[in-house]
Length: 88
Image 1 (spheres, rainbow, N blue to C red):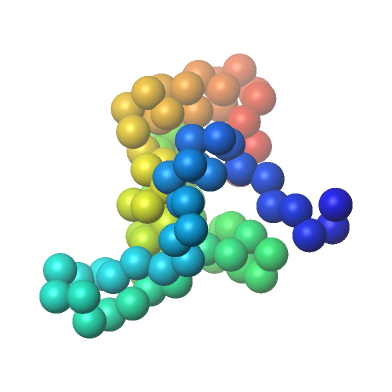
Image 2 (cartoon, rainbow, N blue to C red):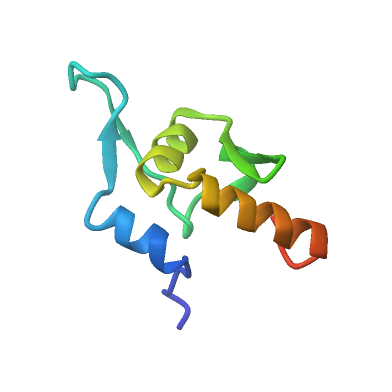
């Protein structure tokens, strides 16, 4: 149990076997994804109006790959925040 990292099914499916992505279309700059076992969430992300936004290249790569900000996910997150059920 100490080695588990929890995420929603959508994020898990989007991540797949990816551990990194290229930050540019030329494929020259590889950026690893956020690692919940080693990284601090607040170092890489912040929340604004239900959107999870990035502070770093790692955050940006993770937001993109895991599709954090699809409209339906932002709306759900925003409503959960208003109801006091979403903790960042």
